[in-house]
Amino acid sequence: MSKQDRTPEQHNKKMKKIKSAMDKRIAAADEDRGVVVLITGNGKGKSSSGFGMVIRALGHGMKAGVVQFIKQADSCGEQLYLAEREPNLQQYAMDTGFTWDTQDKEGDIAAAEKTWAHAEQLLADPEIQLVLLDELTYMISYSYLDVDKIVDAVVNRPLHQNVVITGRGASEELIEISDTVSEVKEIKHAFAAGVKAQKGVEF
Image (cartoon, rainbow, N blue to C red; front, side, top):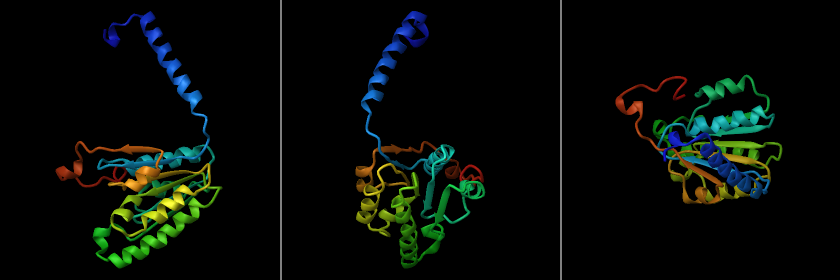
């Protein structure tokens, strides 16, 4: 029987069963602590999702921090919008741009370490309730930062602090310490068809 063929009584019975199962799962989830959310994969929307959670936290009056690796300061619409409006938000960007533009590994490593120092400060601050580490995965895959140092800072953060990590090719270490892992899959992308990156959509 399809959903469309169900009678109102059958539909109500089905919904009550689903509600009962969900109520049991909610009741069983009694651990109150911050979580690590990892958003990886080749598809578009990882950073956008991360910033969505930042805005969600700010909407609840929480304090948040954003550290962006790879991307330049003031290069994203989210940065520009929030910088002028949100006193509860701290933002920092590596500001070297994309690694394929710099062609300077030593300089990139130095910039990554300087940027990570800001991330460590946020991860140690109990007043910061959500930290977005945007494009952090590249710093591990390019061996710009020590993965053990990253794992240690994330694992030992304040109990109720939430962390969102984005970027392609997440390492096994990041997957292991994350509570929620989502993979964004690319089906097709306008850039592959020769369409320029669009302001307000890609950045």
